[in-house]
Image 1 (cartoon, one colour):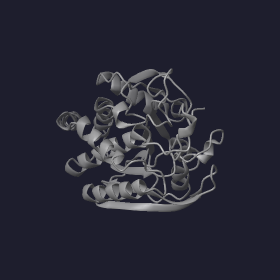
Image 2 (cartoon, rainbow, N blue to C red; image 1 turned 30 degrees about the vertical axis):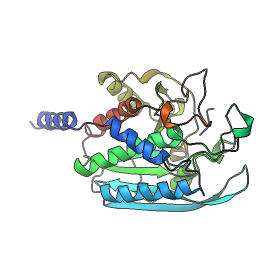
Image 3 (cartoon, helix red, strand yellow; image 1 turned 90 degrees about the vertical axis):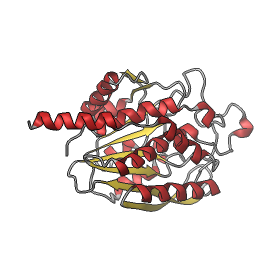
Image 4 (cartoon, rainbow, N blue to C red; image 1 turned 180 degrees about the vertical axis):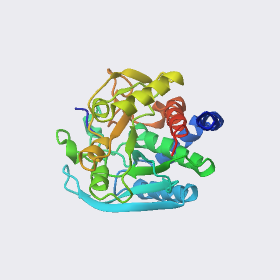
Length: 303
């Protein structure tokens, strides 16, 4: 990623269901920690393969439909070629309304933003940049097993998001590019990507490309966040960021938005793409705010 009486009865039942289904931020944080226990999950590393096995094993438990979408990519920095895999789990596939929830599961092979030059070829832990989004989606997948969503949900864990070179935006988000060019599922109505949402000082403004592409969805989510009293969601425009939502729209025509806090932890201090991207700099409360928003939104939908 780069900076740059019916009806009344139905509504009543939906609201009751939503109030009964609670997103557990502590459990989500456990998913974050489990990923980080493998160390960096940059493609080709042992941590990458161990984490892939963990994610697939648990998604098979949570969903009837789980598969990988495999592809290769030669990254531009060191010219190494890797076998990569998007991981896809589907829920309530018979519903006509179809939503994609996505996050990237790979981590940056190089801490190129680290203040210490000797660290800049060291893979990062990726607690926030990688594990946080996946943690929320894994917790949602577990929830969907016991409380099936009212619409078709595709959870997509994108690979190859973080192998790009500064100044070349489309060298990032390779998994979502491949997915968008080779849709392995029916085309979703829209998508929500989550990335860098574990920051202890969480502030999620409106990413600019998201607002240009899907303003109604953005307004709906930020209004809901206000009603739920989720202070992390800032009703202001933030950066324009190249992330996995961009290829979904530009290539496949899937309106997609990005929930992202790029200032990690703030505008003065940067843990992004450094060795300080560790669980200690992340928070279960932050994961819970994002999870609560998505939970309430999803279970308020009608097929």
